[in-house]
Length: 567
Ligand code: HEM
Image (cartoon, rainbow, N blue to C red; front, side, top):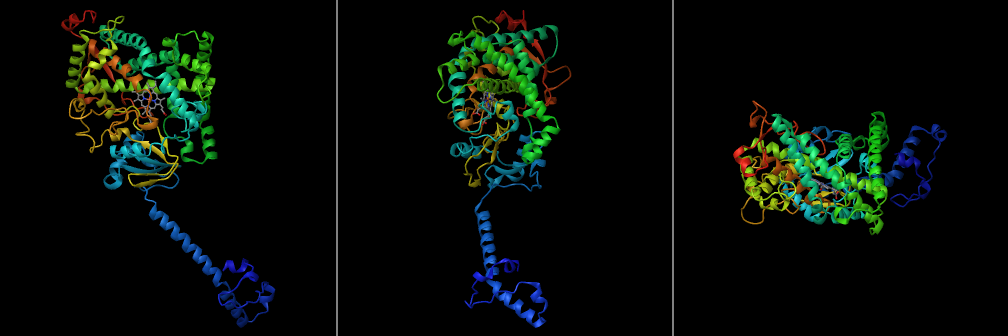
């Protein structure tokens, strides 16, 4: 009816094509009408308006048809019931990878292709929880999902995301990643840090030995973090000691600010900004960012003063980046800020992941004494003939390749305890059809590497810790370099971790040192079955309860074979 009153009837032809007199509009005119007249006008009016009503109804029906057709055509992945505003956020606990795994088991099994679609606050989120779904995603849609969701915290803490990890997909990310892969983390560069690794691994063994001599228990997290941090800081900035300690403090502050959901994940921009300001989140980010910037600026300035003095083989990451700036890297402007962003990125990406992996290995070995003994046997066999020339406590790195069981133990630990269980979040920039489901552009992606490592379709007895599953067998052994989608601790595709070759000798050398020289026992009265193998929440997830063990120098009979050990 409203349409009738507001439309100019002059331009209207009724269905029978009869010319209709202009409607008398004023109430003054109507007031004088008799009931019969009024009814006639109403009738006339109705007759006049029917084309409009029909048109409106037609448009509405057409619209509904399109909506319904689109809905029917949009074959979205399954999704649990959600709440207004927060969507599915209330279903995610402190350990997001476990909550998502439970949701997958409840809603995403069977014909759902290993996918779940969630609304996490404002973000539409695809969760991949099986090896088959990961294979389809990385094989066929890697490019569509190669970006990162925008994060205000990352933006401010990483110089406008000019680092590698949080940079959105595009030319700047591509060139930054190339610098990381080709210049910072290449096999040649990684092997140039062998002396750094050997010295820090020897220091680690010395610290464990001091505890063993004093009969003290050791908090492994502290010991292993100190080791990983020292190696990475020396590789990145050429310094350990006070520098590494400063990195440790800064990292502790940053990790807390980056983990978990952010206000803008749930709220529109303006209220989110208000919440950030009111809760002091912005101030904390600004303080931490300023402290990092001061620290990194000093390092860059000190390196610049050397003015390219380092021999190329002895360069640390800052040296390399400054040299590339002098030489001019195609298409990537290596400003001071970008250099600081890349160095900070690499330090952050390398430290927690490496030390977390080592702590999980030690936890699983203590929980599985059979595996510990078998690995110690392998190490003793190889080490009997091979120590580093200048570090008698440490095995020469090429010998690590003779330790097949060691490699299998690491794979098994990374299967069950990927240090970043959801990798880093990706975001799609184009629509894609994954496992037959339509995924719109702009969808955040979580690949649940933790759940994929437990996928019963991909693994036999997935909950069992059994490194032997990676030894022998027919065909190429499963590896974690991104080609075997059932084992994704480093991710796969374009966004795969570029630090695999850097991290392997770091973790292997330390573990070999710790197992070669010591037996490790639980504190008095504790049995392996009592070990808590749950995770702590965060972007990286070390054991929930820091591992405390007692190192015992190996028996004199064993020590006699390797004379320098614990005598
Ligand atoms: C055990 C050790 C490590 C693990 C488990 C690990 C795991 C990961 C994971 C899961 C990602 C995200 C992949 C994705 O988004 O799909 C990643 C990215 C990254 N990692 Fe590692 N990482 C480790 C060590 C390192 C080391 C030692 C470095 C450098 C020295 C490093 C540098 C990076 C960088 C720069 C990225 C970002 C790649 C990109 O966005 O394109 N990581 N890592």
